[in-house]
Length: 413
Image (cartoon, rainbow, N blue to C red; front, side):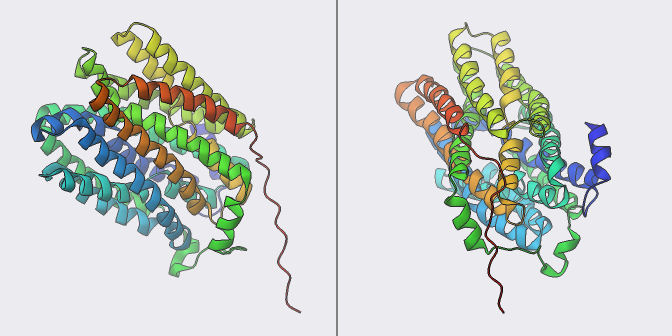
């Protein structure tokens, strides 16, 4: 990985590639690392507050929906004014949201803080914003690889942060653990300083041959963009359902909380290798085949996990394999969008694709809580996740990845 960083640094356009990858990955490590551990708070908070699992799940479902919707506008702002200001605002909202989550005394306040505030924060501190910087500063021939490296490094956050969050909960209690994470989220502000792009000084953006309206019209009329959005919907449904409800599912089956923490940590660890490999393969293979393989394999892995006898070993094997497939959809999906439409509006278009992901996330996390409260089991949601994986694999096969051909606008005499 470091050999590729060194090689690509010689051909980066504006910012040092090491600077982009290290700072971008560090920001994603903090933002996504905190987020991946939210499932550890499900039982402590619901037990203390006497809330149902659906109440907790609904707040996180709102979080994912707000994250996806506001990500569109965060992407527009990042494309226009640069990522620095967006990330700083997102870090401040993250700290406020975590503090509010710690001291919320009602379900409504919990939804406004854990749901709305943290959702807004994640829109400004995660992949769509960081990938916009990468897309504008790395040549197309190296873009998928750079996105894979950034995602792989950022994936280390889940491996690092989830056990840390479990340790904080056990040592300090769930409330003080959230306060510590609120302070940690402010570390994203100084990291963002190193992602300031020279071309955005004075508020001047990159030259664009299209307006925002023209770019959106072109993208949403393009069949391949629609298929990428549909596939990403399934990704969101699967990973957020597993990430939030897996700890409770395992505890319901009689396994210890440590198994759940190790499970999420293993997903994060193997996600490092999966996202890096997906970005590397995206330089050599059609991205649609990579995506189809990932979605189909997820369906198979979940099926096997449900069929074999549940034990700590089966959980760890499932987590390791699922980790390889976890966020490996991110580099090929974003690289495909950049390859088809260019980078002038990459953060915005990536935001729309991610909004589809977050609609799936909303349904995955909310249905998990809703159906569990009514049936006493997560089985129906597991079956839905399997079926959607097969559907997503089929949807990605017809995608056309070639750069779209635009008719030049007539010039005035």
